Amino acid sequence: MSEQPEPKPGLLDIQAYRGGVADAPGFAAPVKLSSNENCFGAPASAIQALIEQTKRLERYPDGAVMELRQALAQKHGLDVTRIVCGCGSDELLQLLGRSYLSAGDEVLFSAHGFLSYKLIALQNQAVPVMVPEDDLCANVSRMLAAV
Image: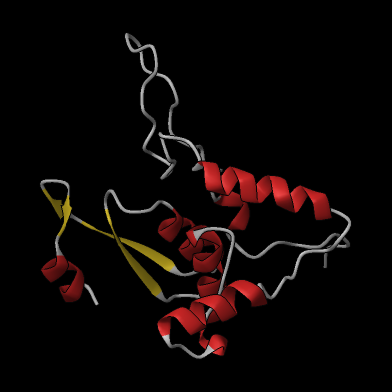
């Protein structure tokens, strides 16, 4: 028995994520699309909203994101308890993986799909299964056949 805490099996074998390249030889200002970034910058209204929030930095943020969830529920006629917010899709996918994946479960993804699918599978001792694409497009029939 080790006196140090041990991570889950295989966790230390996962290669660290490296974001897409932000430069390209021969281009002064290439547009980076690999991380779903907005190449046009943040809207002025979003920048102003952020500036307004800096006036309240002494307040701890609402971890339940209740104000946003209530607004979304009201706008779309949903039950507020059915809405989950996170810091981007990656956090929500991580939560789903921790909640539903078990060792040996299979996670299907296409060759050029979101890299997080494979990483989340490995972090939860599930088996990542890459389904081949046709001309850089996910093949739904192949994915269904792989289930």
